[in-house]
Length: 290
Image (cartoon, rainbow, N blue to C red; front, side, top):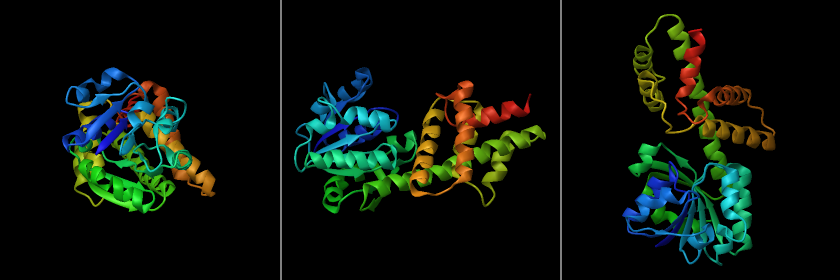
């Protein structure tokens, strides 16, 4: 298929590369064009604008950091929406929230196109190995059209009929992940304050009924003090903000998530915004050492 792909960041670049490997004809665009050089050298075509990347394509993917970035590439004379024709399918892989999913659906509909919200569950390493999980929400015919491309980049695919519900599903998952990581970080700090070794705590936790790949993966980073960004603190805080916005719209009170967002916000303000979210444990450990 002829595919347009907009957004070649931490997750977008490996996903686009997997589409290329699967034999699809790619036109790509990234705000920083130099970041597209790797995939362009392997056969993708670099578009000058999001509109150019979307024009004449069977499918158009977007993979952006947040709802503001998504809006910026969709709208305007050079935006993705301007390049869509009747019958086209727009697929957004971003974690941009429920409101953004509805707005993108409305924008695509005005062009006679269809929209699928398809947020990603998984890490950069999983994306590189085509092992992420996807939650695709949109009308049946649009999902059918995009399904082969989604299978090329993922290990599991869940499908829903409504883009907004796919976006909400991702927020629910990330709310759980945020609570897990915050509790994990504080527990490591508590044990460390009492003289326990950080890695031994991770080992014992992994032997318990509360074990998780998340704890093992982030525990290894904490042990090595390796906070190079795989998933930035700023993005984790953004996700919890979107959870809060969805809760407010639905009239749901979720106080644990309020606390998680506050802790992540504090972590971002501490100079760790661009570090990996594992640095939340670094912040908690630093507190108990004072």
